[in-house]
Image: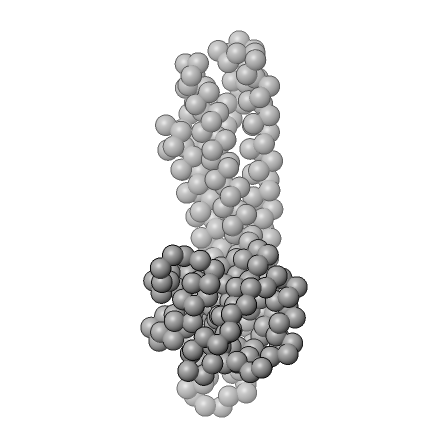
Length: 266
């Protein structure tokens, strides 16, 4: 069977499909498991697949592109406007077909494995930074509950808290000292992990910059047109500037997180 477009509503275990012909009329519907979904495309010629840019969409996008099938990833917030009646898997698949026909919706590019890994590292770092700030503010609150003032700033505040915990004559109850000491050790461990992760991100940016420079230089050599050469130089400047900005942003984000920890703990 030949189909022009297939809309797929992704889920963890069940996939809802709406198959449309060249005139965008739904001619078939299917509800498949993961293994059935992988086999479904074997006996069908599909021009393109439309999906929401949600969890696992980039994985399936790469899988479909490897089979020579075009992939359209649509932002979920724009697809929602095309859902008719109640929100169900079948309605979501039909809404994807309607949204795919809209010319004013900007598509989401399918991410490579490296891009997704880099994005995951940033998310992991953000989660650790947020957890670290919560732990610092928790320890500050404990100290204030017993009339102990902690200096402003994450670095100075942690040092002051460590001294108060170590001082047997401080107002911190003995019952609370061991848990607070464990929380302090957790913060130190998290700071070490964040530092290692930032160095990993910096190394990844450096490798990508070298690769991007080689690609741009190759394009500069292959194109003799002045316009093409100008575009290659501009692309190189944008790539290098973008990743330099990323490294600077990492440093600024760390500093802002320290300020946030101190301000929230006031």
